[in-house]
Length: 207
Length: 110
Length: 104
Image (cartoon, rainbow over all chains, first blue to last red; front, side, top):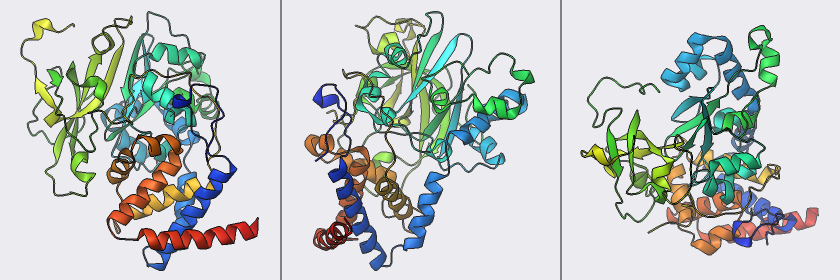
């Protein structure tokens, strides 16, 4: 039986598997896989390969995209025209139907959520953090986004407009944060290293 | 925001059109959250043609493909009883059959 | 008629900040779903998966973790389509349980 580690009201709790729950999950998925292999529907090596593919993307890929947008204006505009094509041209595979890059400015801040489930640009950023999937984030990000940002330590000033994107259908979103001061003289490596997953979701603002 | 690529064929809505999200009271799998139903917003992007997830969810892949738009709402319109920043927005994707054009735009906040 | 998964705007508590590890069985679950949904198999699409966990009923939805919901939804769709039966899955699970408890 899963139990929660958080101290919030039961109906809001993040359901986390304990050891027994993880064992049940492992037994069940192993059984399912065995059954499907026995029916010739897939092979064990295919599953292993697919797991490796799932593990490959991560923040580093998103950071490459952002850093490039900061240093190459043509690339940045191609992101706004058709982000999937622009990213694929960089050599990064994109599994989603389409990617939309939303740009933070002096007067605008963007925040991404998926209220209905957990849609996220997984083929680029990997798996979303548990909080992104939580009921609390999904319920509150659309209604009280400034309070949500405050919980992440981001107190957005009133002269900045906050735009929340609910990733509810076929598009997937990436926030393009503002570049850090002095970015023009920073190396690509340094630029990439200041970009975090939280910047690209929108719960952090300054790189 | 730029328009999504498409081949120039006429689409139902133009960027800037004021639209209302209908409540179709549909059971089964739908991708229009409760909080935008019967709310008015404006079209900010045409996303392209997609198969309807309401059909795909029950294994019906026959189509037709339908138009998907991104619609922007003033947060103040979505949550009228809350105290909010006037410039704050919410944007999400809505399939064409959930949208109707609003012609009396005098009643819409800018 | 509002689904229990349709939570946008509902009242909720603080954001749970703990970063959870991604367990092997969870990766395996996603891998199976990706393969079953690919162009050669087309047996479980993301849309069908979502319909699956939206049809659990509120109790089953609330008690399971995110990836367990994905696993159970995938199983429901496969049974619905007669790719597998509940009986043969239960038998396979019973076998695996013996294997895993021996290993422990």
